[in-house]
Amino acid sequence: MQITINEKEYNVKFGVKFVRKMDEKYYVSDGGIKFGMALEKKLPTLFAGDVVTLAEVLYEGTCAESKRPAKDEIDTFIDEHEDIEGLFEEVLEELKNSNATKVAITRTEKMLKAAKVI
Image (cartoon, rainbow, N blue to C red; front, side):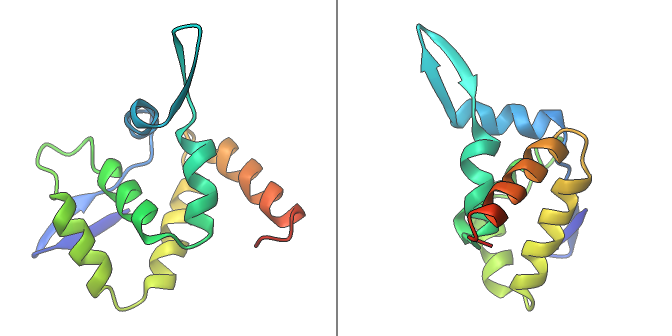
């Protein structure tokens, strides 16, 4: 997936590096051992249409870029996007197609549908 901010294109990739970066922020700790829980914690809020989560996912999705957009630039990109629903759909579709996130997002979507949340 690519996004254009200030006439510069950025690749957004939801691979292992993305998951690792997210897990650094969102984890549970037991006996001094950290277990990454980013996808389990953040995917439901992404399905719910949380723009802060969308901004974080897009920002961390650019972690493999040599020059990344600033968080403020991502926020402005979202604020000014003409089709925010379409942007959410595109991000969710990319997450469904990535090997690193495919299993977690499929499980989350099934769980949310079973609970009649989405």
